[in-house]
Length: 236
Ligand code: OOG
Image (cartoon, rainbow, N blue to C red; front, side, top):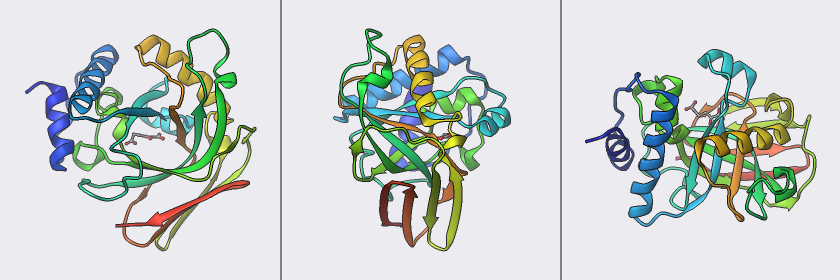
């Protein structure tokens, strides 16, 4: 099996695998493209993209200087529990693209709505241990997402973010996302162009976590961001 097939099988069977450790960034995005093609072959439709490593602290921790991009699919929409290895929840800002991002107008003019969201990440690698390129290949640990009520596009910088999972609570600020989540959109446009990732009208964009991720255990899960949301569901 090649790397994409190995990751695809790990995801389908919810079985963690050892990380690869030896990919270049170019190879890693090539694996991700193949992995998405396998999902499309299985009938999934790409519904959006997600950013990772949008906080300076996480970039420093991983020794990287570039945000990473993964793809969201129809199978991930609303998926919060079934068939996951060791899921974690992250509070996120979601944006909605109203037109294709093709360089003719700035990406900020291609966004028509914003919402609070919970992203479920679930690394296919054992113990969430991976290099930056491993996680690019593994589609940035994307596993599921739930989006709160959409609101017309507005500035969402410097807003308090709160994520509750059962009895655990983390709080942060949208400023943790590259200073302002709008900067994540600009960073996305650049990386997507360089890595050959299309950004289509209708896509959801998850702008990256504003706090640490919390293990997704049982109990009530809720994300609220000042002026947005809330969005909630019952944990596993
Ligand atoms: C990689 C995905 C991280 C984020 O917002 O930084 C991510 C991982 O930590 O598994 O989604």
